[in-house]
Image 1 (cartoon, rainbow, N blue to C red):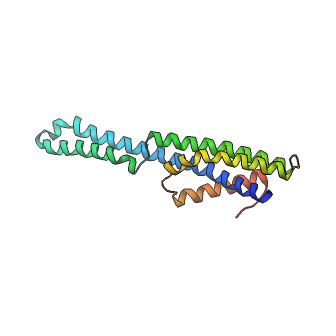
Image 2: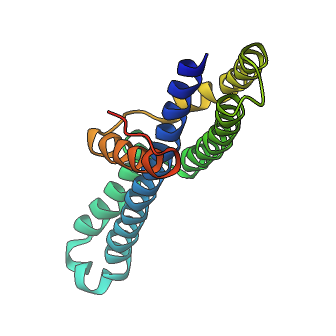
Image 3: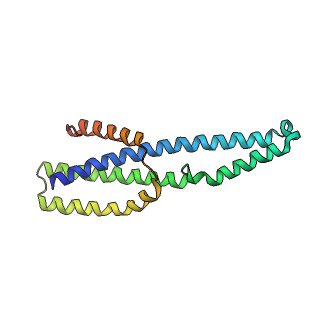
Length: 166
């Protein structure tokens, strides 16, 4: 049971870190996307005196911006998806905290193997709730973010638990 709790705790720490980093990156992309749409749309509309001889260009710019806005959810997360990432982060933060409590209770013999087993699987049952949201929201796991989340997780584990992990 000890090993199972530990592995789940390590994974929960990683999931928390990844959700935080992923949300931050996606918010950055969405911000730049919205700024770009605003600049190009404004340039097309407000630049009318400059473009009045080339009305087709202005129309094409505005039409392209509308088209890009329509396909945006397929490439960049929207506000609902970012809200889901926040829910995922909150879930895994709480989940990790509960696993840490269980880990310390079990390590310090405040609960026996049977109670730890029951608490662990009751806690594990709550993960089902968020699984659907994770599957709908996290489309890909960029290797760069996975590696950074791993590094943050290892640093956290080393500081809090004094363990070195692979």
